[in-house]
Length: 88
Image 1: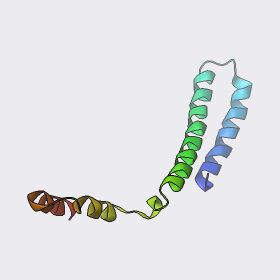
Image 2 (image 1 turned 120 degrees about the vertical axis):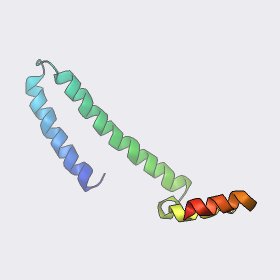
Image 3 (image 1 turned 180 degrees about the horizontal axis):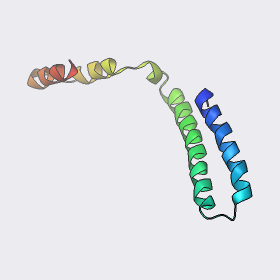
Image 4 (image 1 turned 90 degrees about the horizontal axis):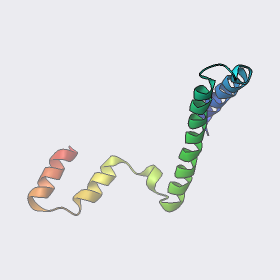
């Protein structure tokens, strides 16, 4: 998950421990739900990155200049001229 996510996980763990003592307090359920959403989003991202790495191994090295070149290779005439202006 990375260093930032690891730090965030430690922070969430402390918040969850604190909430376990406050469970009956108003608003605790909403805060717990918000923490769950953050944790779940980390795993969704990891799964997506793993899928992308498998489906398109070159994706992590691709930059916008290469994408624009690919798009412009299919253009011609006035349309190509406009794309070149947009790319600069």
